[in-house]
Image (tube, rainbow, N blue to C red; front, side, top):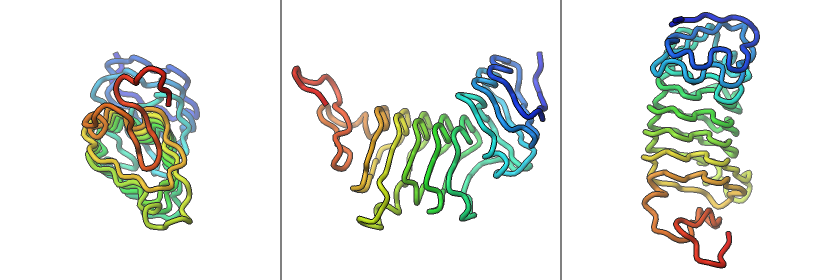
Length: 231
């Protein structure tokens, strides 16, 4: 019957509060260093997370798979509606940093941010716009299931810096399930596109059956492949 919780222990174990369906407020102290797998999965459908520390400390917390769907996220007494770091020292958004953050509506990452970790913005269902000017590595599920993401400006540095640009890696299911994302524009220097990276986006769903190319890369075959054909 617990509906609010304050935790400041260094470690929160796997499945610690899994399926506590009445838990609506999760407050985390800045002494917390790790959150285990599925620790807060399947708590109240509408909940909020408060963190008593700054963004730098938030990023340092190690998170297991599906550890903490953030809900409405407050860090250092500020509701996180947008994320646009100005510090050049920020080079990575760590895995699951904003996983399930329902308050987040826009993301604008500067050139200094080169890596977006696995599931970093996964399931942010109110995220509308995301810009990553310098990203060269986007992890698995990084923006997956962002139902309202309609504008994603990625790899701007690579599109403008020519042959000296670092090769780009896009992880599996990176944008999968972004059902309002209607345009995918990629530069030439794509080194890797993971499986299902753009499946079930508006762009993909509007394509005709047949081979699907992203730049010079044969991404997949949509529909039923002819016999004796492999990709």
